[in-house]
View 1 (tube, one colour):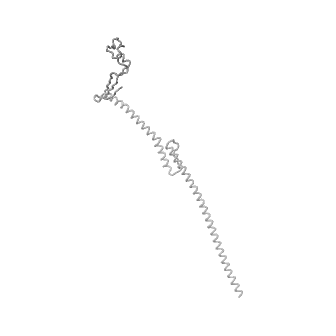
View 2 (cartoon, one colour):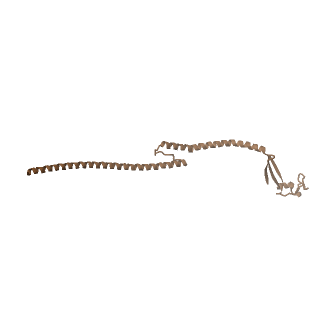
View 3 (spheres, helix red, strand yellow):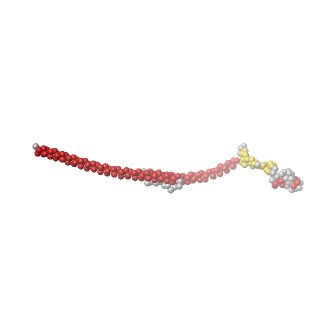
Length: 212
């Protein structure tokens, strides 16, 4: 097992690690019977403890001053921050140019097209794009097609109404002329009847004079 901690009083990082015996450790700390010198002592003359593999005996400690670590961290952060800021700035510029070319300019062209149309139904937006702007262009163009069809239907009905109105006007004029002719004939007949009545009166007077 290991232990890491910060000694704030001395501004150091402390690393402590327990020492677990391995087979190599037993050459000095193992069974005295196996002493390389044959007297129960290790090669340096210390008595062997008859320890076993896996036992924990002691620990080692490493103390690292924090001031150099912090200075190195700040230096590395400065080295990393400047390129990172440059990369971020380039990324923002690339994003701006991308949005300008793919969104802002197409929207500007669409607005200019609609402003120049001034009610002309033959104007169409760009519907070749495979994004939301293309979908907008396709929907708007389909809307104009439907409006054109509706206006065409209204125009055809208006032409029919105009033709019917012209025919009614012609019929009315014809009937008016016929009525005028009938009135003239009636007046002529009335004049003839008046003359016949006058002649009849004169004949009656002549007959009465002859009888007298």
